[in-house]
Image (cartoon, rainbow, N blue to C red; front, side, top):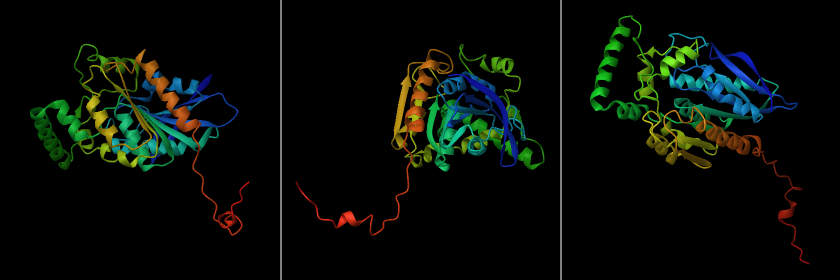
Length: 318
């Protein structure tokens, strides 16, 4: 199926957010998806994923969160998951204004921390009727950072946050720090490559972003997601940044219908083929089953004497 891409803007609680809307050619309204990227990455990076959905007949809106990429908002690069949840919900509202989109069939997809942001958005907003999480990472921010850094480095981080708070109390801005500092031959140059590929991307965030991460714990809400269908597609190879234990911990608390797929790829495996092809095939199949084809719940009419007559009617037998 062919599609076209449209650059759009939408309002998120008073701040302009930017998006790329991938629209398949169709005479009728199609199901819509909101796509969220990881951390302070940018929507242009989602061009690796969105065409899979457009080819499958879904309208896909890839968004930049507030303070990131082409969206407005200050301070720039503030990584604030709770506000990103709001941006997902604002994107749902925007999709519902588009005549090309079936307003009753909207799903959410997110990669890395964008996936757990999508889950929390769907917990709060029942207009989101299906969720897919790819390469899930952060489900309890405190636990995640403590595991990543180790206790000594984590304590040093908290000392820095205390100092940064005092600077902000004194009227200064929060310090700016790298958003990504990756270790390992296959990933260490990824931030530099991202800056080269995507002009609106900056590998930096405000230090107070870490405080927002520490208090972000959608694992403690995920039990409230059901009956919204949930698919998690996790990395089973070497991956310290999207830890399988994190995905398993959150998945265990989720209700049905749910599915966890662990694929044999490393940290970048679901961002590039063949892992990308495999993961996106699973995602489109999930959305096809639980978004496009799913029956919507309908209200039962108020009983009347006539409609309830069958209760007292004598059974007849041949």
